[in-house]
Length: 172
Image 1 (cartoon, rainbow, N blue to C red):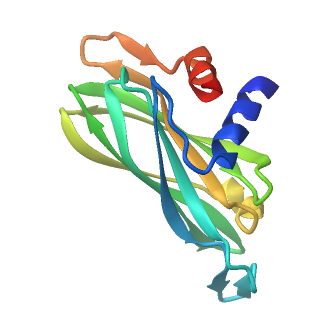
Image 2: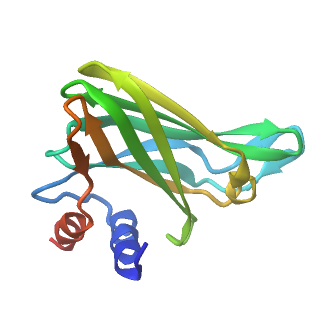
C-alpha cells in the first residue's frame, strides 16, 4: 500500500466526524483497549476504547453494516478474530473484505484480508475470520478500518475498490 493511501487512512482516523460526498464513513465502539486474559490484564490503566471505522462505497454491490474485532487465545499466543456484517444488493459469488489495524498513535500496524468464495443471495450476511499470525499486535490494536475491496457478481463481472476515489473523498 502506498504512503499516500496510508496517510489518507490515518487522516480518517484523526478526524472526529468524517464524511465525504462519495463515501459513507461510520464509527462504532469495539471494546476496551485494556482487557484481561489468563496471563493478566493487558493495557491496564488505559481508559481508551477500541474503535471500528467502516468505509462504504455507495457503488459497491456489498454494503458493510457492522464490523468488530476480538481476540482469541490460541496455544500460547493471540489470534485476531473479525466479524463483519454486510448486505449483498444482488447475488454474489465472492467477497473480499480488508481490515487495516492501527495503534494508539494512528500508525498502521498490519492489513488483513478476509476473502470468501461462496455463493450468497441478495440480503444480509455475516463473515467471520481469524488470523493466528496477528498475536503480537493484539495488545497494540486500537482502531480497525474495514472496507470491501472486491466483489464477484453472479454474472462473472467484478467490482473493485477504487483507491483514487477513496483518496479524493478523504481530501474533501
